[in-house]
Image (cartoon, rainbow, N blue to C red; front, side, top):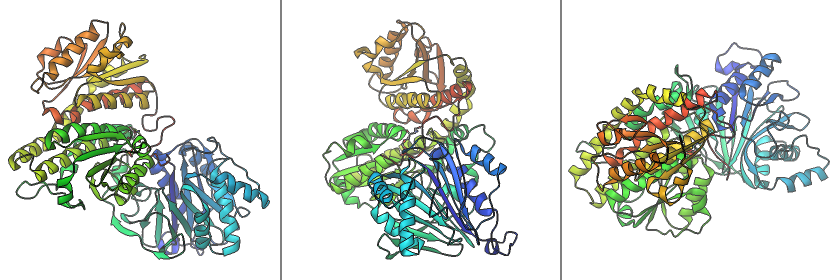
Length: 631
Ligand code: M6R
């Protein structure tokens, strides 16, 4: 939550039109460009602050609402050329989304500007202490308290880096802070504690960002910071230390995202583009996972094979869409590996005293790698002795850094707040993990693993087919703008798909939607069905096992008899279900366990099209943020 960008660079070094002072328009351009790419992290307000040689104070602009409001304000009242900048896009916690509460917050008579991501839990105590010192506050935010505290420390230390370290030592909660000061016009100082911050390494310029999307258009060379570190960037240097002031080092990595991947590429929305990216997300996540003999190899798995052989329980922890990917993982891993798998929302796991030991493998799934609930659950699991394997999409993020092993998904940057391609990539990664464990523990013969892996490879092509059939889904969605309640049913792996379909509709179209296990219907939810009630039903393959298909067909008949309008996701060639469906969205035939990769796609398209038809912003739904970095 909250997007943060920092930049230090002078025109003399960066080769821009040289001004004698080294100041240029680039710091503002980089800050606004970075904020555009980070806006998915929060869009309650946006602001920038700039410093340059000879400027008596920090120049700044900030506006409530989306970034476009800030851009318009800056166009109307231009900011001066500069050598360093910070920028912020906010998801409000302390204080409403107003101009005054927007970041940056100024202190030291306007010479110091601070931006912040996170929550400072001891802010009211600190505010009291500062007020006793005669400080008065303009905003309701915890950030202004940090700014004033930093100003007080700066007056003592006379050095921004030392002052930041002293400030960080006094703060409780979670924070990434960035500061610029008019006294040090080529410097940005940052501190992180349980909130994300990465460094971008340029030539004659350096960058800071909540994630690499902030600077990937300028450099792919990056530095991962550990917890509780201070970083000071200038155009030519990057220095890292701990909160005690001891020198430290970041971990270098190269970003494998293409800058163009963070653009809309001709689509109306990022979400539409990301739905269309899904065949690649699946294929790329599978790339390089087998050796020449077809055996699955997982390079970043830093957990000893003997430990994985002795695992007697798996617990998947995640939130939101990632948790639904975890539910699919449960069905696949239990079936292939015969290991019990529990799936738990990370925030519930953390606080319920879970039974976890060294024979438990905890699998943390997260697109951003920064979700605070999931991160806290990872820490808790490791404290209890469990090994943690992270399935994460974002390089340089915190969860993989704090886990024992990582299996990266290769979905590329996901900008739309509603997750789509990351979900498919997470499910794909879970299948890879399941097959790897089955291979390692001998639950499947090598040829069985190889065959399943081949079927998995073929899913990318089938996802593409579902996308190509999207127009009928869109037309159906456009005709359903008046719906105020939509239900989703599924069994087995269709159940998490139903829950994900409901979540997409809630978050995008603001329609009340619920996903149910189809078998649970008659235990209560069927009372919701009345004349014309739209109900999506995910139908298992008729070629599958255990009479699943016929059970779901019976459920469809039960709700139809009570007046429901049935919108059915079914496999090509399913002639039985055809007669009970009011609308039918066909998907290619696939092995039962792999069907979620296909069945969810029409539900994503439906939610996006319905929200679009209602004139809603599908990329930035109200009240949400992409990366939930507060508990
Ligand atoms: O970054 P993460 O995968 O950890 O995020 C988890 C959830 O916050 C996320 O999936 C959320 O539910 C999305 N808005 C769903 O579209």
